[in-house]
Image (cartoon, rainbow, N blue to C red):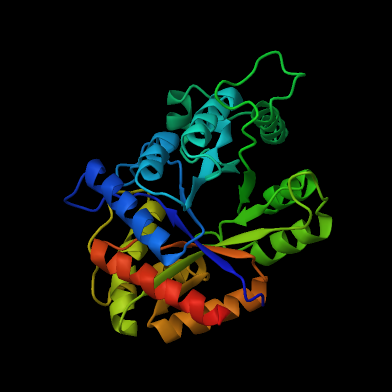
Length: 333
């Protein structure tokens, strides 16, 4: 395991029950400022549409809010769901962010639509496309950001910005694409860990060095819920558990308050679903979290963990990320 593993944050800007979008976005900014003081590498936000509990649908706009209130932490998308957009528009959006916050902007790209067919139609994009469209879109976007003269149009802003691209995925497809293009690869193990080991093996085995990256670079999604006791951390994690159950049963909503003993109250099938979904998670005290993180890093040899942790109470969330940073520092010592 490398001593220099970086820790970053993936924020869904979740709207707590009884709260609103403005509060969620302001909490995201406060978390990013907190993360900056703690030495986190990057702060990414994700694109989701048609979900009342997630405030980051207009991801580039939300990132401008974060960038304007921070000074040094990298900001970016984890990710932009490219099937929803024309590559030129994304080049302009992230070219604008790079002009505002030079040297700090990342662009993670996903193939999933991040929505259902109804939302996809509302976005005026057709989901009935062949699998080759995503790689083509990535290459087109890359050409806009580099200012490729073979294009008949220049992205303004965007051309020449060379915003670094990351391929996101939870399947083998993304691993193969990231390897073929010589780009860093971020695996969504924080909610879809099933193909993690196979995907990382394929990515590292098939990686072709590029002008962007000389050797494979792996980011793994990971959930951390850290508190002063294991019981308290389990209680805090119950908000995200409730959200997962609600999503899987077709009833997504705002982030609910925690419930004592929630996991044990569920029927066996739901408990099994949570156990599978939360394989890449650490829930407990700092020592408990450290043991879990150490084992995960030993297993994956990840270069970076991007940490998610949907906690209802904002102060408890800030504390969880503080404890996680202390774990990072103790692992590097």
